[in-house]
Length: 143
Image 1 (cartoon, rainbow, N blue to C red):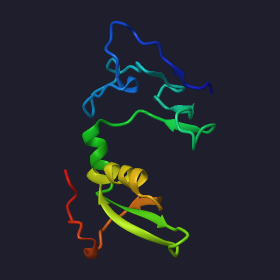
Image 2 (tube, rainbow, N blue to C red):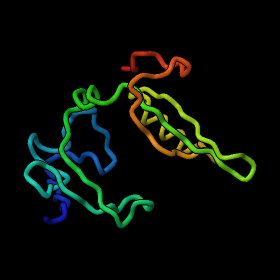
Image 3 (cartoon, rainbow, N blue to C red):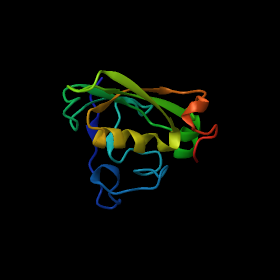
């Protein structure tokens, strides 16, 4: 198995994705049925590649694959997630906090904790099939 190779961008096609430009969810990054930015290892569009953009994971590899369009993929995700954080410091006794978050708000919530959580750090994330009433998270996820 060979590593994925970065594709050569065509000057005739608009830049997309990794160059910082934004595209609407579900809009392809390259020609239909093609891989403008990445040449996959396997015909099914999957493979392994070196992690070279995050220092915490540098030196390891990540798995990639083609995915479904945004609406289909989003509908297949769990409606709610339980995000567990750990809080521990010199002045605080260690404990964990559990937050129930809708799928529509998950990315923003994770970013908020990661960037502004202080001593409170992300511990793990799991599907939450039925949010407890005490969480005050409605039974219908945000659209």
